[in-house]
Each structure stands twice: as structure tokens, then as C-alpha cells.
Image (cartoon, rainbow, N blue to C red; front, side, top):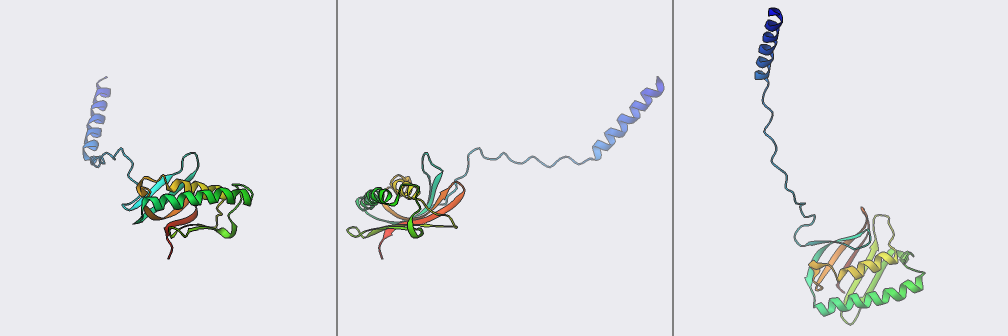
Length: 164
């Protein structure tokens, strides 16, 4: 019995000596912020279109009159309704990979085009044009250029600006 308590004392002595020579762990990292940092920089905007996988990411340009902004978006939307009927429905591809609508009264243009070997459908074009009036950062009064994402894939690019 004396031998086993002596052996136990020796083991405890050795283990406490070894633990004293082990360096203490690095200080813990500071707590990470709970909030998610914004994905866009100042002057940019990011707008997910509700009930779709479509997301727009763009930059804010020069100001235009809000009536001009509303006019080009409304006229484009009306044109799209007629074009969709004529082209065979929302799931049809836009011809030649590009959609352009020019409003000569306001001298504004909306253009969308395919990107990254993807093809835009009329449905995506219509959702994008309708969403432009809802992007809070644009306040219905700024020119913009933007990228169109369907899920993680960039499928198109576009802009709303004055004709040059």
C-alpha cells in the first residue's frame, strides 16, 4: 500500500511539472460581431426581387427628375407586356441577347443584355424593370448601371441612363 501511494505521488509530481512547462494557450480571439456586414460599398445598391431568385447589384449614378424615372419605367413595363405576348411568353429568350427601350420624350434608355454565357428571358427582364422603381437607394430618381443575378450566377447587365 505504501508503494502504490508513493507511485501515485511521483506520477502527480511528474504531471504537474510537465503541465507547468506547457505554454498557456494563445489569448482567445475577440468576439465576432453579431451583425452581418453590408455587402455593398457606399454608392452601390443590392436588391433581391421578392418571390424570385433574382437579385440586382448596381451603382448609383447622376440624378434625374423622379417623373422622368417613373415615366421610363412605366413605359418600358407597358412595352414589355406587349413584347412578351408577341414573343411567345415570359420564358422565351430575349432576341439577340439584348433588350433596349428608348423613350424619346424623356431622352432616357433602359438596356439589359446577357452576361457570362447566360441568356435572359422576358420574365427576368420584366422583373428587373419593375424592381428598379422599388430599389430604395435609387429613390426613383437616379440613373444606374447594374448586374442581374439569378441565384449565384450573373446572367445579365443593364443600365438606365440618358441617351447620348
